Image (cartoon, rainbow, N blue to C red; front, top):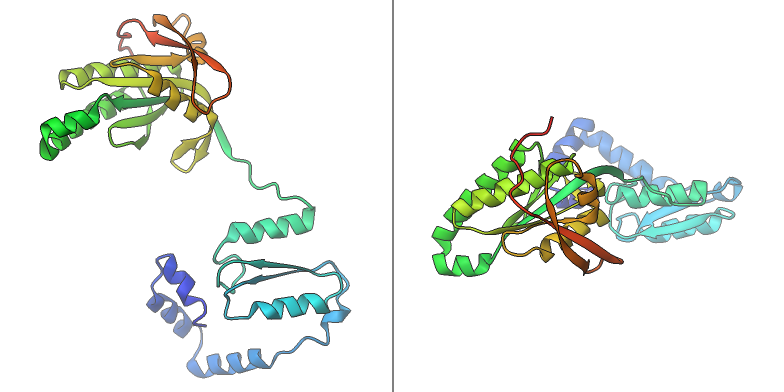
Length: 284
């Protein structure tokens, strides 16, 4: 069964582990008898008698030649043949989503796929202003030390305001919150903390439905938040009109920053800047 080992190795499973599995499954003599029995199997005469809808799938580089799958398809009346890339012989071992998709389409006539998990969240993007210039001025070692201190400040703010760090972008963060007011206060706290280190931040926020992709977030709402952040000036916390409407009555003052076209996002967007450092008070 050496035809399985290469694909397992590509996914980090050592060939020795597959060998151990084979040895634990049967004795060498039994394995040889099984292999000889497989080689002698010939069901070609029975295939024309199959009268139910049939799907035949092969992998293009499998040790079981794809030509055999094409032959089976010709012998089974009305059979459908699909050849997938890869060399795995076991169904779905290389790309289970591809195999499952073909089976789903064959059985139902459509390939719907799994609906992504979506959540309503406020997404915050932060970014160090002029990070490249500061790095060049300070040198690698001093810059890395300063950036580590910056990271600690921002992470502390995210934790304080009950956010979730989605990813670290090198000179900034992406975080999500279940409330826009907390997200704004987190951005302001991170900005003030960074200023004490001699660093200026800019931040952008938007609230919308996001696709949950493992630990990451995706979807248009994330792209909008990123574009809002890119439009922010030095030391500015910029929010979309959606966020502005949601924080009415929170005590957070916002100033109009005009209408903007956000790259890659349909329409025009009214943006607002936090007028003064929002009160660093945890919402209940």
